[in-house]
Image (cartoon, rainbow, N blue to C red; front, top):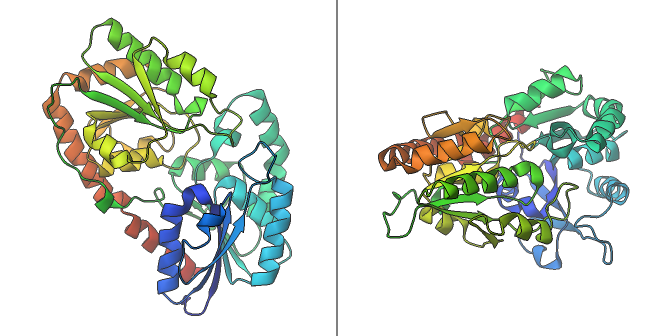
Length: 377
C-alpha cells in the first residue's frame, strides 16, 4: 500500500513528541495527510508540526492528574476519528492503544496500528492493585486487540511473547521493532574525560519506584562505605501520572546522607552523559526499551542495567555493559566497582555501545521499519 493521499491519525502523549514526530513527518514526506492527536498537551504545542493538523487534548484544570480521564479521552478520540475519517490510526503505549481500540469499535474501514511501548505498571508489577486490574482488563484487551484490521508493534520480544501467551496478541498480527529510536547526531560519543573530579556514575530516570532508584541509592551507599572514588547523581523530574511515582519528600529522604545528588529535571541530557563515566539503570519496570538506555548507547557510555525485559535489549553483557539481577544492590555495586576500576574496559564498552546504537537504534531506521508496516497492512 502506498501512503500517497492516505489519511493517518497519530495518538500519543505530548511527552513522547520527539520520536513520534519523526514518524509523522516521514509519513507526510511520503504523501500522507497527517493529523496528530496530542494528549496532555499545552497550547504552545499547537504549532510544533508545520503542515500537519495538531489536535490538543489538555489536562483538566483543578484535577490533580497530568492527563484527562480515560472515559473523557475515549469519547474525545471517538469524536476525532468520526471527524477526521482516517485510513490508518496509530496509537502509542498500552494505555492509549487500548482506549483508542475501544473508541474505534464498529469503525471497520480504518486500519489500526498500536505500539505497545512496554507493559508498564499493569503487567510488570506484582502489587495487589495491578494484579486485580490485569485480571479485570484481560478479556477487554483480548476483545480490543484481536479486532480485524488491527496490528500491534512491540519493542521487545518478551512483551510480544507474553501477550501472545495471554491470547491478547497473535503471531500474525504482531511485529517487533526495537524501541522508539534515538537521534544519533544529538549525542557526541567522545571518550570519557579524565578529570580531577571523581568519575560520575549517572542515572537518568523518571521518578517511579520500579525504575530501581532505591537500588541505585543503596549501591551508592555500599560503594561510599568502601571508599570507592565516585560521584553518584540522579536526574529526573517529578511524575504525577503513575501510581508508583516517588514524591519530592520521598526522594529527598532517600538521597539524604547517602552520597547521591538528585538533580531534578535537567534540560541537557547529552551534556550530562558526556560528563559521565557510566550509566546505571537498575529498572524492573515494564518498558519497551528505555529511552535513557538508547541515549546512553548513542553517547558511547557503558551501561549497567538489569537482566529484565526491555533493559536487556540495550545491553550485550560484557560487550557494551553489564547485566545484573533485578532488585540486587550488592550485584549492582559490584558491577559499578568493577567498571570504575578499569577505565580501558569502560572505553571499549563505550565504543561498542555507540556501534550498537548506530546498527539498531537509529531513529531513521525505526521510522523506516514502521512505514514498511503501514505499506504492508
